[in-house]
Picture 1: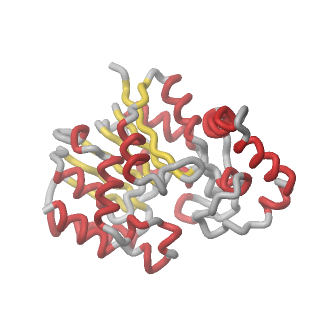
Picture 2: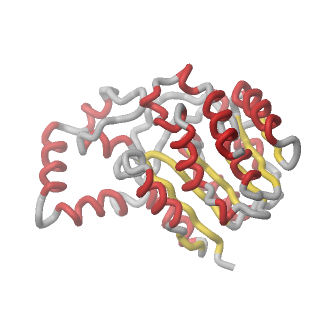
Length: 278
């Protein structure tokens, strides 16, 4: 049944019709890669008997995946109306209860929402929120386990001459901010036998603590007039959750790095997860 679930959701994913395949990655058109993604995002051992909340589930493959692996109930929050229509049709093919797919924005969903969820997944979504800290504070108060998947800030791709994977990859603003000498010096430091290993780790983990990308200026209308796409380094979440007493869960990043190394590698993409210490 799992193979049929993966194939059905992959076949009905609308993104290949809207965005270039390279932009979204192979998961959009390959059910086997989707299986690897969700094994990393939502390992079966954290799902049985649990309530799951997915912010930005697209057509809600996470819902069917979670119920198949024994979740008690799963909720999706998706702002795109067409995605919700397709998602509900796909879900009803396999499950008629213990799930709901809400067509609303995240800010509205969490407002005055006191319900608790065992597991929260935030994949490819948090960069669209204008107030990430306020959102994460809600997650900490309403869950015991949080998984976050996102891109590194695109300035690293530019400075390190790594191919970029979004539509504004040739935005002139990067050239205006970072000179050819900046790129050359970055390259020399990364290749240095004496400093290279340290510098790569410094870039990834510490410079700076709250590193945001250049604001691309692309407004996401359903998220509010001021919402824009802003990527954040993974160390922001590390310090946020550790400050709140949560523990890092390495199995998600370990699995994704091993099984999808072209996708989950610095400076392209990362997945981090944290568990509340009881």
